[in-house]
Length: 232
Picture 1 (cartoon, one colour):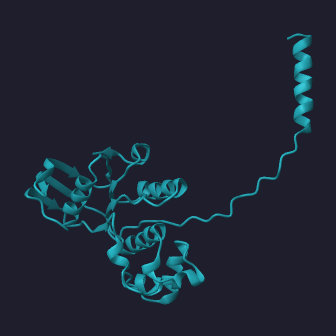
Picture 2 (cartoon, rainbow, N blue to C red; picture 1 turned 30 degrees about the vertical axis):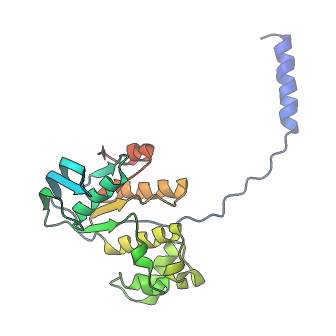
């Protein structure tokens, strides 16, 4: 535009030429390979809840709830009452009964349930290979080890005792169990706990791609809005 701008541009160019950039090394951090594959596809009727009521210790936490769940729905449960969200998943999973109301489950439904608190699964002092073998039709050790390797438990890691696992390791092992169950309806109570953001996104992407129905309890509204079709 003018001589002064020309001098500025020349000065900036010289300054840029003097900058030495360090080589950017790719991250060596590994992430689990998660893939949910249902054994059979859902029919038209999945799950229907009509006028569900549920109280705990004299307090009503679910009141007159109606919810129709259809094939391939991706539903996020959002809200401040942690107990109510967990209770709703347990009612759908058949673990507890509502005070009143009707639940209809389609004949093609095969549910897999991920509990928020799964410590009861990890009380035995057995290694990961034998623990996961209990939930696998294929009992071959090489298959079990290969499956654990996908979840970053390779070599000696696969022989770790389940009763000493960290919170994040328990989540990975429970995801292995759910993948082996091959359910077509996934009920997941806060599965992103103990996970960093990159792993959370990877998990949600797989739930989005899943050829079945997902009902997931989340804290992160952004994740829910990005990866779920419906928010309850």
